[in-house]
Length: 154
Length: 154
Image 1 (tube, rainbow over the protein chains, first blue to last red):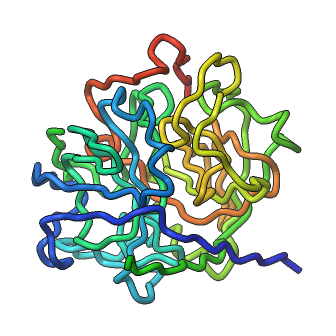
Image 2 (image 1 turned 180 degrees about the vertical axis):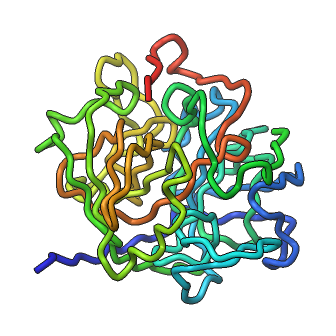
Image 3 (image 1 turned 135 degrees about the vertical axis):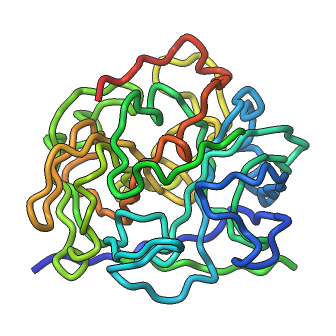
């Protein structure tokens, strides 16, 4: 028998973005360059100390409007099905979103960031510093997405 | 009043690693090059289709042995306190871990990966394809970690 556990997460903030719904938000590999604000709830604000020294941060959030998922999905513009874990679809068993963004400014508990592709009101779960030696890989293969990816500017 | 919600996550797999406890696991910026196995539970295995085309994947997991957190932390080897969100400490309000690893092989629902720094038995929450144009940033500042980071080999 596998031991099954449930992890309960309470958001540490909320994301204010110009995208009011999923239709307005860019696909993750298309950077609109829009500015968003990340509001970290005040009781967690002390945890932001020194964050302004980092040019980029990893933002982890809850795809809170996602309902259900399918294990095989046909991403927009694709003709064939791909395994969910080989896509960045927001509809996942654990609906966790992940975006690396440029940190433009910090004012107290508000971070201004560029390149965050979430919709307005998205619950924030975590922020980590982006570390090139840890988060970046020098050469990669991108499987079914080969030749289909734009590069982001921020 | 802020609306507070709780996100309940049920793991989609389990990580089998050579590190039996936190003392054995490498710090995230020191790649040991060890091999780990990611077991995706069979009911989610169909979601792995096409994953083998990617050389690197993003693994999101639960720091399940983490208990509590402090908003200001002194990372190992550091003399001064830093905000939690400016560190990769496993002790966080939402104890979510994130590692980019090299995908060595897939056999059915078992992924063999290199560079995963979690302890044995860590619950798996999500796998995403690593996309250089999305997850990588060309130039970055790393704040208080400047000059303190090794580079990883995988």
